[in-house]
Image 1 (cartoon, helix red, strand yellow):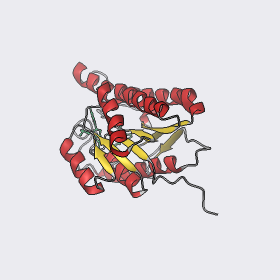
Image 2: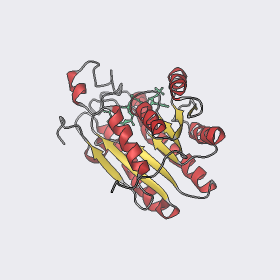
Image 3: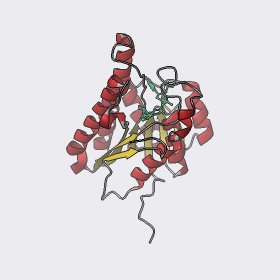
Image 4: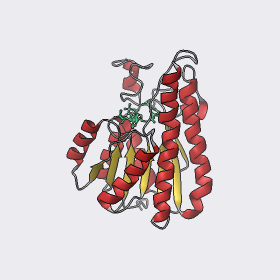
Length: 245
Ligand SMILES: NC(=O)c1ccc[n+]([C@@H]2O[C@H](COP(=O)([O-])OP(=O)(O)OC[C@H]3O[C@@H](n4cnc5c(N)ncnc54)[C@H](OP(=O)(O)O)[C@@H]3O)[C@@H](O)[C@H]2O)c1
């Protein structure tokens, strides 16, 4: 018997960091699965291209900077205005910079802390507020990292931001599960995207070819959302076969 899955065709999903990489792949796969998406990032041209590709009846762009709590509220409102509801949010936007603890400037680290940690809080708050307004239920999917489970050399601050997401999501699960809100944290290892290029990763590095593809993570998001509502996935670590755990 085929496994029971949820039909996503009547659902609306907000995706942060959808102008590139994992977020863009996730938006595409969600639309392929029948969902409608509200996508956010700073680069409007890329969001516009994505919406053109997916179709204005399936996708809406809500440009914004995730470090600003108002952008999170705009994203949620944009989804509701365009499609009448919001069922799920994928908290994905993030940046990475690798190096020793003293290698980056205060400003660079502040940017990473705000982009990865603060933005997750703002996105979660805006989504949960909407889920409650609509009568309860919903999904929060946080894209953290294996760095958020075990840390690593040359990434202390980045790993700290990813541990913070794991802590946020795990605690949120305890707070909202009884309202029918599922909170899932996906922790990918290296993914072949533009991520950290020039900030510890180099374009064309053959190691990137052995990484996960952004679609692998997007497919995992679809899988989690498709699971029957009697269950939830709280934590999912994912590695390419080439990378040691
Ligand atoms: N790639 C990896 O190896 C890897 C592994 C594990 C986890 N992750 C996590 O996966 C997530 C996505 O990474 P990725 O690999 O897809 O990276 P990416 O290709 O560089 O994409 C990052 C996305 O985040 C958006 N973003 C960054 N700062 C933003 C801001 N201030 N406001 C709004 N949007 C912002 C970018 O859009 P704009 O620049 O247009 O704003 C872009 O859409 C991150 O949270 C990352 O930590 C990545």
